[in-house]
Picture 1 (cartoon, helix red, strand yellow):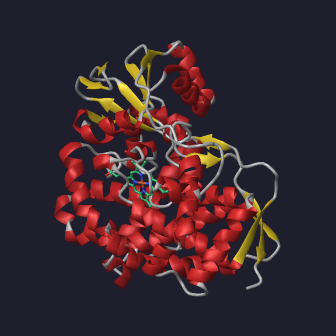
Picture 2: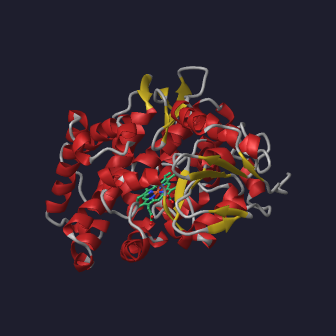
Length: 439
Ligand code: HEM
C-alpha cells in the first residue's frame, strides 16, 4: 500500500461564492474535489478569513494534537452553544480542562463493566417488540435504543415520555440546523415556533432528569458527578449544559453509526454470515460481558470499517487563535481549518479500493505501520471524544445481540444515501426486512 505522502499547498481554483454554494449544495463532493484538485492543504480565500482544508494525517495531527493550543473549535461548533450551552463539547481552555477532568471517571474503560448490563437489558427489551417478517427503519430503531441506553447509563432513569420528546426535538433541530448556523440574534431564532418547541422540550427533559430523586443507579452514574461529587465546580447553567450535551451527543452519533452498519451488513450476506457465526460462538444467549466484547473481534472490525466509510462526525473545524505554521503553510490567527473524516478516510493512498466495504482490511492495517490520523472518527488530542469506549462497546454489543437472533435483509438494491448535516445521516433512513433466525 502506498503511504508516502505528497506535501503540497495550493490556492484552490474556486471562488469564495462557488465554494459556499458547493458547501450548501453538496459538501461531501465539494470537499472531496477540493482535496483531489489541490493536494494536502487546499486554501480558499474567503471574504472575512482564510479557509484551509487539511488532507494529510500529519497536518491533522498537528492541529488536533501537537499544536492544539493554537486552535479553538470552529465557528460552526461555536454556534452550537445556542443549543448546547457551555458544555464539554463547546467550552474552551482551562474551563474545558477542569470540566473534562471532573467528568472523565464516568468514561473510564473499567466503567464499561457497569454500562454493559444496561446495554444488554435495553437491547433485549427493545428486540422483544420486533416481529418476524416486518419492515423496520433501523435509523428510528437505533435512535430509540441508544437514547434509552444513554438515559439509563448517564442519568440512572428514563422518565416517561423522555425518549419521544428528545427524538422529536432532535429531528427538528437537525432540520433547522442551517438556521442555527446563521449569525442571527437569538431572539430572531426564537421566532420560529418549531425551534422554540424543540428547545423547550429538551429543557423539560433536562430539568426532569436533574430533579429526579437519586435512584441507586443514578448514584453511580454521570449525573452524580454533576449533582454531588463536583457540584461546587459547576454553575447551574453548566450542569444544565452538560446534561443536554450527554443526552444528545451520548446517543445520536452511535445510533447513526449503527444505522450505517445495518445499511452495509444487510447488503452483504458474506459479512452478515460471519457476524452471525461470531455471535453464535462468542455470545450464545447471554448478555455480552467485557470479555465477550474483547472476543467479538470481527464485529469490532465491521464497526471500524463502517466508521471509516460512513463517519457520523464527517468533518472537524478549528479556528486559529494565533499565527502558526502547518505543513509549511502560514496560518494566520482567525483562519479556519477543516479536517474531514469523509475525505481522508476515503483516500486511496491509505486504503486500497476505498469505496469497498471490507472489514477484513483492518486485520492487515492493524499489523502495519499506519498513519495515525488517516483514521480519526473520534477526533484526537485533548478534545478526543470522551464517549469513544462507550460508543464502541455499545455498538459491538448491539450488533452481536441482533446478529445472534435476527437476519437483516435489504428492502432495496442501493445503499442509503449519506446526507451531511451536523452529523452524517442516511437521507431516507435504513429500511430493512427482519426475520427471526432459526437458532
Ligand atoms: C460513534 C459514536 C461517536 C462518534 C463518531 C463521536 C465523535 C466525536 C468526535 C469526532 C468528537 C471530537 C469533536 C471535536 O474535536 O471537535 C467528539 C467529542 C465528544 N463526544 Fe463523541 N462521538 C461518539 C459518541 C459519543 C458518546 C457515546 C458520547 C457520550 C457519552 C460522546 C460525547 C462527546 C463529548 C462530550 C465530546 C466533547 C469532548 C471534549 O471536547 O472534551 N460522544 N465525539
